Length: 361
Image 1: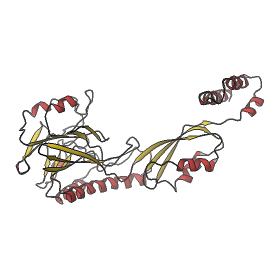
Image 2: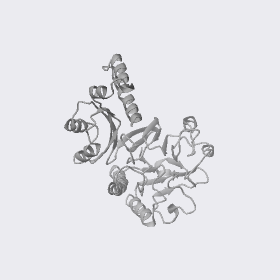
Image 3: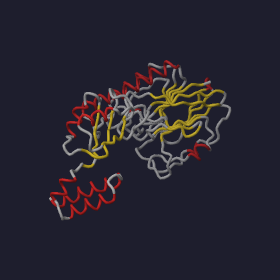
Image 4: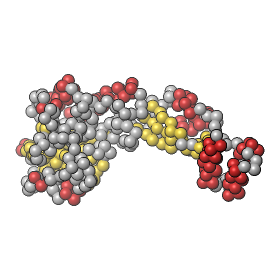
């Protein structure tokens, strides 16, 4: 039996320059990614795994330093009984000036090269690991898999690769058909940040920490075993925080305090530690101040953003009196005849009024 952990897309050193949260949270988030990386190291030690697979984008080369890569090495040195396998990706690619080649690595670390798919045998574990490191930040064509050739079916055969299952991708395009044809016991993929088990023996681990609101849902690592050539894998949630995007429906009769309570009713996640982006829809009283809503919710949520997709509520009677016999008056009455109990008609009325009133201005 062999035991392994499959991770990747950690993005150590990411600066979070283009995010919607403030600089203080961005700096803290950068430290939290380091913390999660080091928790993975501790978990690998605790579980006494044989292999730790890192399927690319371990770090952000643009922001990483010698001090940072030394810290990575020191963490790897602390689990000397775990074989660490790295196939570099497009963010940590192993080019001429790669930090991977600036320091001496401990004996338990294998970093694959970029000329062709390489392999390393671990005879004591009856296992062969195949891998490849990018040499630039884009790869348009994939002719790599043909280099693997025939495999030794008496051993455990594992491929660690950073790539995209999409034939039109600029990031090492792959196909499931080609991967299946390799007859590997397990294929550990990186590049896609959403964890996805594509087959019994093929998986994207996803990133252990989500990086922005485009990465909803659980994030973590994959644990696996191979016993008598039978692979068993499971996804393990591991992130400190989550990014949560939700919709909240409002109506024109809600007052300020009722809206606050309605937003607090969002049940998903943990308000004390997760990032929330709440999209407000429906109808909103024109006197509600969105900035004040955010400020009054900040004590309840670690981070909250409100996206106002509501439609202003109008006093229809006042508008009819003010605009008697003009187009606004006739428009309101025409829509009333269609029936304002129908939410589609009501929404159309209010959207039309916004256009007409702006045109009048």
